[in-house]
Image (cartoon, rainbow over all chains, first blue to last red; front, side, top):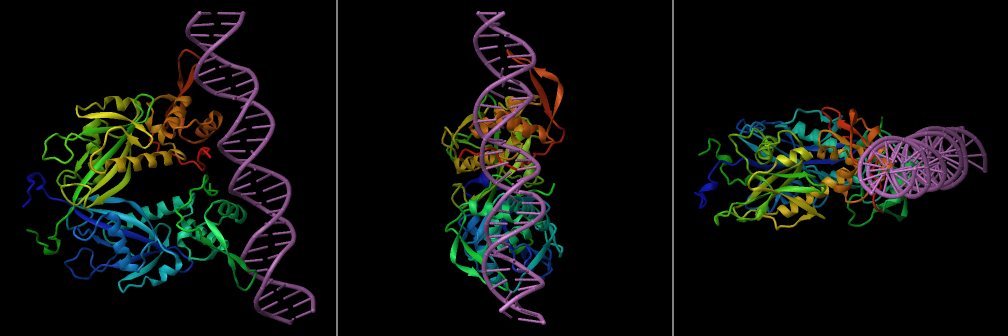
Length: 235
Length: 235
DNA sequence: ATACTTAGTTGTACAGTCCAACTAACTTAG
DNA sequence: CTAAGTTAGTTGGACTGTACAACTAAGTAT
C-alpha cells in the first residue's frame, strides 16, 4: 500500500544484462550463462547473457548492479564497462512487460581466464552471432553489442582493454584485426598508436622464436582514445 | 497476487524521457516542460525533460513510449530519434528507486515551430547547460545528450535532421557550426557533403539580398551518414 | 557604375594512410 | 658456422581529403 496513491499502477520488471567480450584464444568471444532447467523458468536450459533483476535494496544504481553481475560471473572488479542501451517491451519476457539495461564489458586475456563459473561458458562470435539460440531477445542485443564494438574499434583504442597488462604492438594490432575481422596496415597502425598518448614502452622485450618485440603497457588510468579517422574501411 | 511467487519483489519505477533538440532561431535549443506545481509532486514548478512513466497497457515498447511522449509535446510523428542511455538509482527520484530510459530527438526548424504546448518551452543551450535548474538528474542527462550530439556531429550527417525540408549548403554548414560551436572550413565541408550520398539538388534556388544559393533536400529515407574522419578538431 | 555581401571554385600545402620493399633480430636446420 | 625462415620494425613514394587563402560569380543597394 503506497502513501502516494498516484504510484499505484503496475510497473515493468527491471533487469540488467551484461555482454562480456574477451579474446581468450585468438578469437572474439562472449561469455554466456545457461538458464535454470526448471520448467517454471522462461527459456529453461537456454544460453543467455549474464544478468538478472535489479535489487532495489542492494543496488545503488544501474552501473553498480552491472558491476555486481559481472563480478559474480568473472570475479573481475573493474574492467572496461560501457552502457550499451536498453530494451523494453511487453513481449520480450514471458513473465510480463520487462525492460533490461544492457552494459558491455571488455576483459583482458588474463581476466578472461578466471571467468570459469560453473554455469558460464565462452562462445566464439561468428559474424554477428553465436552458435546457440539465445533466450529472450538476447540474440538481438548481442548483435547490437557486436556492431557497437566494431564501430567504435574503427576510431578508438578500445582493443587495448582486451590485452593483458603487458603486450607488444603486433599483439595489439592482432586484437584490432580479430575484432574488425580484416587485416590492418602495419606501419599506419604503429604510427597511429605511438602518436596517441596511450601506451608506454617498458624495459622488457617479448621473446619468441624470432625477432623480439618491444613490450608496452597502457598508461595508467587511461580512458579510451578517440582517433580523428577510422582505419581504412573496406569500401 | 502473482501466479509466480518468485516475481513478488519490489520493482523500480520505470520512466522514459526525451531530449528534444532543434535550432529554432540560429541557436541550439532544447524543449523543456514545467512540472506541476502541486506540493505532492517532486520538484514542483521546476523545468524538466519531457517524459513520464511507461504505460504497461498502452506502450508496446520503450521506443513507442518515447514516440508517444514526443508527439504529445510537439505533434511531430517521425523525427530523428536515437536512444541515449538509461539512468537508474535509488536516489534520483524522491518517490523511490527509479530508472529512466532516455531518447534524444532532432527536429527540423519547421517542426520546432509547431512545438508550442502550453507547458513546454525552448531553452537555448549554453555550453553544456541550460539556464534554469532542472528537476531530478536531468541536468546530468542533458549534459550527456549534448556531449553525444556534439561527438556524433563531428563525423556524421546528423545536423541534416535539424534542417527544414529544403536547405542550402551554407545553411547546413551553419547548423554544424551552431552545434559544434566553432567555424568550419567551407570548401572541405562542401567536398565532404557532396561526396556523401546524402543530399540532392532541386531545381530551385534560395533567393536573398546577394548571390542565390542552390537548394538541396535529403535523399529519401536517408539514415545518417558516417564519415571516415572528424572535422578538423580544435587543436 | 561601384561597393558590398554571400555562393561557390581553385590551387597549394600538409597530414596521415596505403602499399610495398626494405633492414633487423632472433631461432632452427644442416 | 652458415643459410633459411619468421616476425619486428623502418622507409619512401603514391594517394586522399582537409586547411588555408585567394579567387570568381551573382545578386542587392547606393
